Image 1 (spheres, one colour):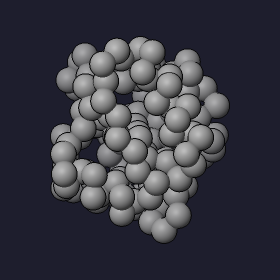
Image 2: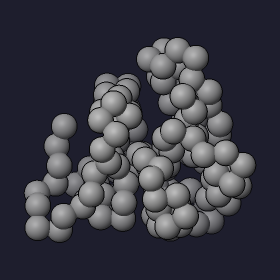
Image 3: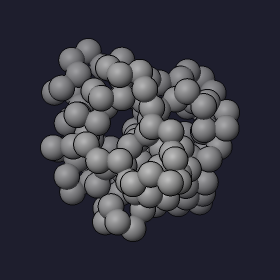
Image 4: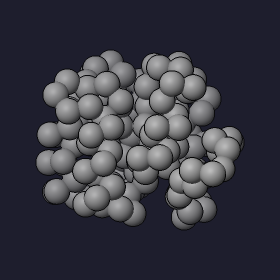
Length: 135
């Protein structure tokens, strides 16, 4: 499994990598610190999942998400943020994210979110008439 972790803070990338390395033995990790680096990494090889921070320098995670979903529509993207779910989750899902995970609960929610996405092969498709999906 290949996972790309995009966050502007090295400590956050390291923490997310440690959480995932324990759950996904043998996984390979790549890192990006901003949107341009995300797109460069994706041009070289496509990961199985992208973890994308909402707040990064330069282009926001939302802007990057739109580009990623346009160029790599099958790539599952999990948006991560310290912001409350009520503020950003709906917006992320509407923009094409497969999941939204709050960084404060990443140690509990991130691994199950990735397993659900990869095991099912089904990525969320936003229906504006439906309620916010819950795990």
